[in-house]
Structure formats: structure tokens, C-alpha cells
Image (tube, rainbow, N blue to C red; front, side, top):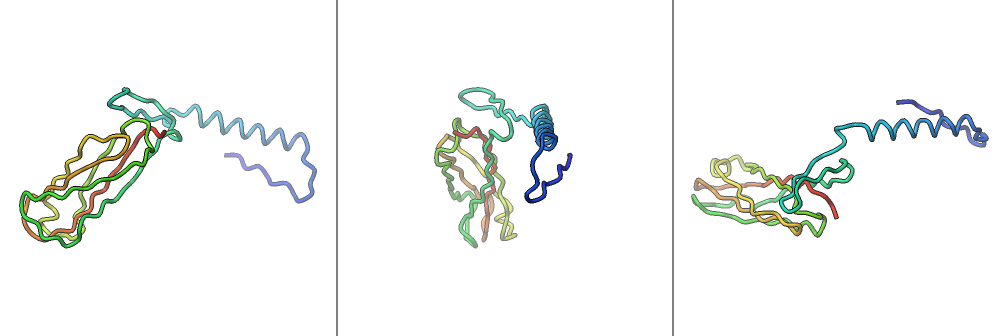
Length: 147
């Protein structure tokens, strides 16, 4: 990328300097708009695929902390929610990953189940498949078209 020298304080801005600025801005614009990887397709359940520039997409990374050091039994479930506060035009794509923060076997033997996301939020459940003491977080990655 070209480096345009900064003008000295009090230096008059001549046509050549302004022309160089305009040329580099045009180069940046051309390079940014021509790149194929600057676009993302989000497949919405109600309106089909939405092709958007990366700058027109909202991505959230969320950590949902479940109660720490909780004694659980096999088949016990703990629910969680996350509100989107009207940020999305369509229901976003949401993925969830359970993180065994405590390191115990009960926290390492879980299933995360998500309900169908809406534009308002997401609900999910962590199901423990083993009894014991567990400290589990759920990491959410949320990708959608903003309002």
C-alpha cells in the first residue's frame, strides 16, 4: 500500500498532492470492492440466502456462564438465553460450543441443544450426561444481517 507523505504544518496543498490523495483513495476503493472474499452469504430460514459485504454483517461472540461448581445428575438440564435486542433483520445463524471450565468429567460429558433462533434471541439447554460437579460455559457464535 502506498504511503503518502504528510504535509508540513503551514504547507500549501497543491494540485499534485491532492491528485495523489485522490488516486490512492480510488485504488483503495477498487481493491476493496473487487475482492471476492469481502462478501459473505448468510442463508436465512425465512428469506433465503442473503449476499452481503463483510462490513454489512453482524458477528457476535458470546460466553454464557452456567452456575459454577454445580452438582448435577445424569440427564439434568440447565437452560440459557441470549437476547439480540432487535439487532438482526432476519433470524441469525447460531452455533454453540460447551466449554468444560472446571475440568470435571460431568462438565466434559454434556450436550448443547439450541432452539430455533429468532430476531429477538436464542434459547438453549445444556444436558449433563453424567453425574458429578460441573462448571460449564457455552460459547455462542452468532452471524446475521443487522437491522
